[in-house]
Length: 322
Ligand SMILES: [Zn+2]
Image 1 (cartoon, rainbow, N blue to C red):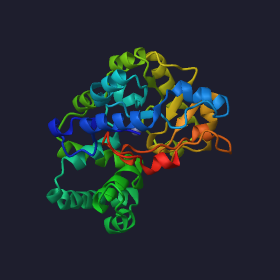
Image 2 (tube, rainbow, N blue to C red; image 1 turned 30 degrees about the vertical axis):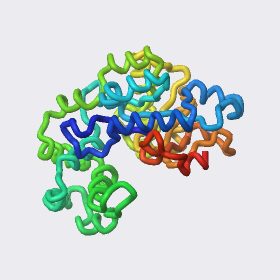
Image 3 (cartoon, rainbow, N blue to C red; image 1 turned 90 degrees about the vertical axis):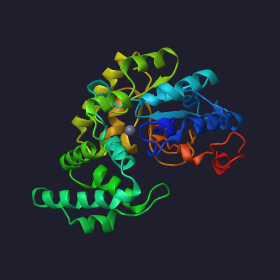
């Protein structure tokens, strides 16, 4: 599972948490040495035959959110190496030139040097205070106590800001605050920023023509399980329209759940609409022969950081598991 793959040092936001293109190249060489890249079509075909016909160390590369960087940096390398990537564009961001809240948060953080973090937190404290009554919010301190827990990638302050603005606050307020802080920290017009950040429709079409896989990532990048069934269906229908427009396969299509989030309604709708496979953000090696229903709609993925980014690295623990 890849997100940002970019020339970090020479980019406008060198602090963004992403995979530098040089390390991406190294990782692709590592992957070629230890795994066998397969296509979405091969995975589906194998599943139909009971998971028997994929090579032992099969690997499928997925890229979330259709960043322009994927077109600029990842796609030529994949094309050169004859590897298929699976790309998942958030439709509204690409077609209406908006910026996903989750990206706003990343760029707010990338524009905030560590010494400015206390200022960002105090800004958030006063914004929460101002909206406390209107939305019936908890106090800043109580959110902080609950949400500020460091994880394997981020400090507790960063985790707090991400969780607060991605999920803990009411949806409208999350959107308002992300937009406000984005304007202040990044200081760029949203539609200009969007055009720099995401692929264009023509770039996506070009990738389809070159054999890359393009799947659904919803329309408005919602936590799908938070939506009633009819709204989930809207998300799915709009993303299918988009797949059709860019010439992607709408008979045997796939979805990558925004935030890895789905529920039983999602899976029943996907089956109804002919979706073949769903990618989550659960960290594990996928087992196509796993017992239980719907394994193909709950596929776990490894993160870019779970595999070495050095072409000469020795085999890793996932290799042993996989
Ligand atoms: Zn996404």
